[in-house]
Image (cartoon, rainbow, N blue to C red; front, top):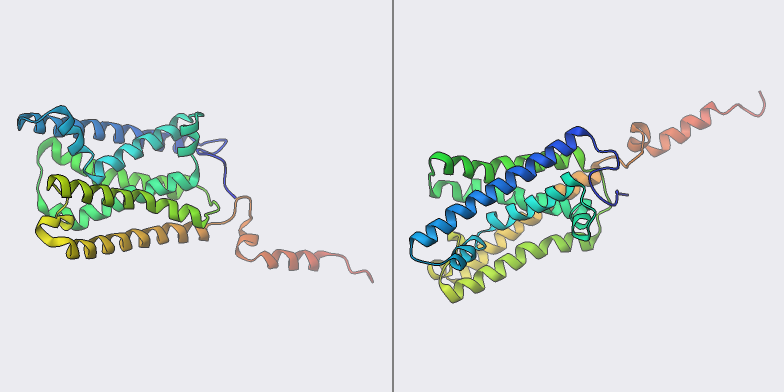
Length: 246
């Protein structure tokens, strides 16, 4: 039902170009965000490890790093075990769902909380709007229909669930929560539990959209007629068969 890895065995120039563009933007964005965060922590008198820990506290940073790795594997057609893993359609689809969810969550829940200027405003748009849109476009144009198993869908949930668990555990130890809607010290565990349940529900809804689009795509190698109505072609062939009495 699906190729072992992406890009397809005979990739188009467009598919490789878009994958390369996404990888370059993701690496540049991650590097710039790392520089900003570490310099800010050093300015406050904290250390390098504190900067790295703060970087890893934000879902955007972690997801952008995963996007950079995944699309680098696709663009370079890496044949190592990690490269082949990230090139599998179900895995790359999960990565695309993650970054699209990050973009939707930021633009609907967090954009109004601050107004960056200069290159930080540009970086903010690249991370939360440009890269999610490019990833969704790549998936729509260049990832063919593939067989999606229940274990694949459950695997997609591991990343957000682990992030929530680690973030809440870190917050209980340091009293730092990266996002206001999971700030236990301000909202309490009951409200945070409601908020995280709503976020997970939204993530599952987004998963459902990608699953539905994948299911509606034609099967590889199927003609438009047979994909729309597999019995129509059979009936047409029967009408063209010569009658045994003619």
